[in-house]
Image (tube, rainbow, N blue to C red; front, side, top):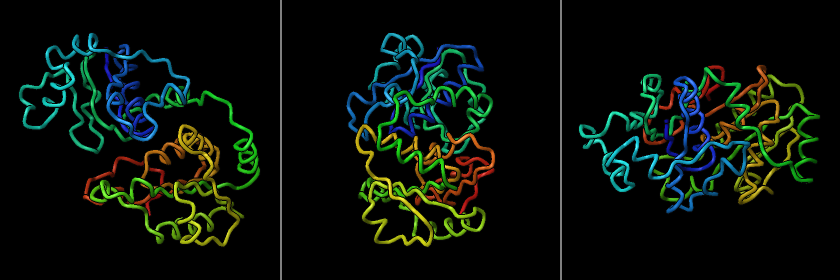
Length: 291
């Protein structure tokens, strides 16, 4: 059994699920999800995979985890053994992501293992893209307001543009993440406008007032800010229906762009994902344009 630790926001959860799902398919093993992180965390909207998507993967409790990790399966012991200084005593079935970049060793993990990491690269699941897309089919029908917006999206040369501020502006994240600059968005909009006839921008943001005050558009555009709280995943859903994408340094809009199956889509991503020097060169597919 592959036990897959799930934590973080929706975009993080999707990367973790996709990497574990791909490993389970390669090894012909069952995957179970460890969602115990959310017992003590109120981050974002909590565990969302089951609520948002048509996924029915079993959950792993202490019995399943201890079967794979033995005495290291206790929650407090997992936290200790996961630290680098305890690598020598860590069981070989306890797989910790060694770096943010793609790790080829994922294809060599044993059939019984516990996965812990962000796994943020399409390379982890590039051999089962169609299955991942099917798994990430949205469960609930769109509400009337989003249906009206979807009609506009599908009738135009639509471009999703994501501006994430919120927690990125908060002090706790300033040493890791930074909001994409106005210059980045201007270059991205100009690039799209040179490639797409009469583009219409659909601007998704958790801080629409800041966007309206700081980003000026010479092209038709709509602001999308009504999907809040447990409905915020619908922004990703609407992004995925746009023709082209300008994403933030956010796994949320990464998935909004990736879920668009069109091979002719233009996706623009920021060159710098982190401010602390973390190498994110494997994060975006090669076809995406980095500015």
